[in-house]
Length: 189
Image (tube, rainbow, N blue to C red):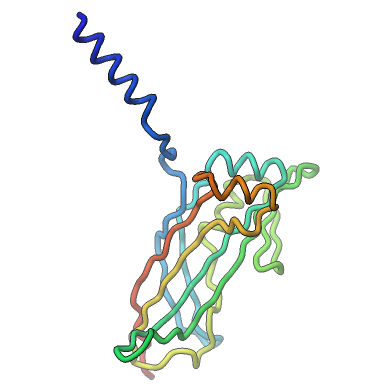
């Protein structure tokens, strides 16, 4: 009896003293990404798995805009020097909530604005940002192989200053897919 009580007490103490972990499903992960050649230039098509933490949802509901940055870099390795960066492009998503109208809003690069009635509908746009031109058609050399690096993350530097201070030391505000790489071969014509 005492042995079972000791084991139960030890397990409870272990659970209480263990560091807190993020809830399953929170964060950002790259699901798929590819480069497509078009008449306008090279386009990035990507999709992500995006789940906001409870803290970020509460901040959004209180009127704090959240900025997410989608970055892509296309480079070609060189044996004699640093890698040649052929394309470097960034797209910014501003997610906000209007308390008066009870509507969510996404602004893409400050130009395109879309309104949504539900949080999941707004996040769907962030999960599948669409195809966007990242470089013109002359940016890449034909028959060359490039390394494409893609990352989507919360840009803490664009938060209001008082929130930036607490966000720097809080893991719940660090939301990023990390850099994911894949190869792209430019097909010759």
